Amino acid sequence: MTNPREKESSGEGRALQLPLRRLLTLAAQARRRMREGASFASALDAEAADLPPNARAALQSILYDLLRSKALVEALTRRLLESPPPGPVLGLIEAALALLVARRYSDFTLVSEAVNAARAGRRTTRFAGLVNAVLRRFLREREPLLALCRRTPEVRFNAPAWWIERVRAAHPDEWESILSIAAHHAPMTLRVNVRRTTPEAYLERLAAAGIAARRVGPEAVLLGKPLPVQEIPGFTEGDVSVQDAGTQLAAHLLPVAPGDRVLDACAAPGGKTAHILERTDCRVTALEVDPERAELIRSTLSRLGLSAEVRAADAARTEEWWTGEPFDAVLLDAPCTASGIVRRQPDVPWSRRPEDIRRLAAEQKRLLDALWPCLRRGGKLLFCTCSIFPEEGPRQIEGFLARRPDARLVPLRADGAGMMSLIPTESGDWSPSDELPAVHDGFFYALLEKR
Ligand code: SAM
Image 1 (tube, rainbow, N blue to C red):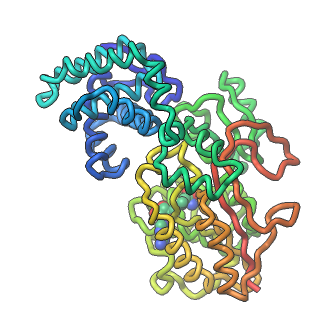
Image 2: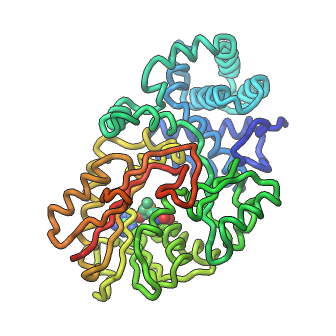
Image 3: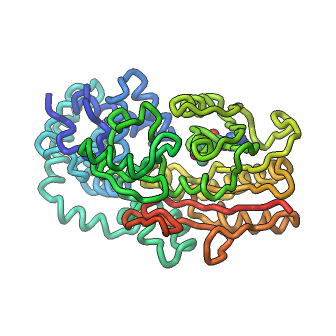
């Protein structure tokens, strides 16, 4: 057996138990499922059903590599194959090409494990020669082939043309950098639990453990290299959680006083619920429409020693869960296209359809309209999405303000700007006088007060 993670830098696949050939076979099968219409999550779940957590993480890492170079790999296979081979063979070639492009393993290891994977499969064995020939040809012609394929915007930005056009239209000055960052690996940011320690003390603890890290926000610490959570000092004890620095702003932007009744309307897995409770002793009701995901809120809170009323319910159907007692503060972290977190979820541009933007914006509107009556007069509602599309940000809020004369936009920026649109960033320094974190995903915030 080879050492399949020899060049792994993300830490996602530590202590691997499966040989690379087996992982390649599973990745090829998951790729075939996705090509036939399955979502990334269901394809991964189906192939990883019997795997231990570390092997599942390794498989996910390979599939992420595949998605991060999906357009390139497809362009390469069109050039390298005269006609498409059966699905399992094509999937194997695609997975191997993605890993060769990402330079995760030595070329020799990769090709020989891909050929072994082909030989081992009933439906792929007679194509082992083809797999070998295609991968070797790629290695011989790598640079000119890559240059040729990268001429199209779809390959350069690894996204469908409609997605690229939407990003360009929404952000005419920043679209190229937004799309380029989306193709990179996501940084790993921690949220320091201020009930248990301080960012300064935690940074010292990391330094003592030989883990490079720096501060990128009030409670946000960016690790030099992602680590499995079990290897993060104090994670199990609840000293830190994993949370992007941009989303950590939610608990700062929503004013909550001790004893307040707070509604977190779309709460799973509970990152923001927990952050609010870490900062203030308040009474939180956390809703989540998906009962399995509601359990994630419970386990997040239990790890951190916090408590909230957790309910599985559709937040918009207030008649099913609301007692009629108004809330002092409401957080609506609404379902969205996730266009601001593509580097974290590389399947997003490929799994979305153009009509999803309008469908999700309509769902956000339904939630906003239904939850507004639950807020007391003088109370505040923070609306946020991890999207960079205006329909799920400024346009949504402008529409709401036009419908609701009793709603007022509260400025979020020192310069008086009412809404906050964060564009993904991957470098920069932070100091306590900064309004925004240094490194963050794409995110949108608007704070509404009820008059
Ligand atoms: N606030 C969470 C955190 O910080 O960990 C992330 C929330 S995620 C963006 C949106 C969540 O809303 C998903 O878990 C989704 O299942 C849930 N959701 C979607 N529609 C909902 C609805 N109508 N009522 C309640 N939850 C809903």
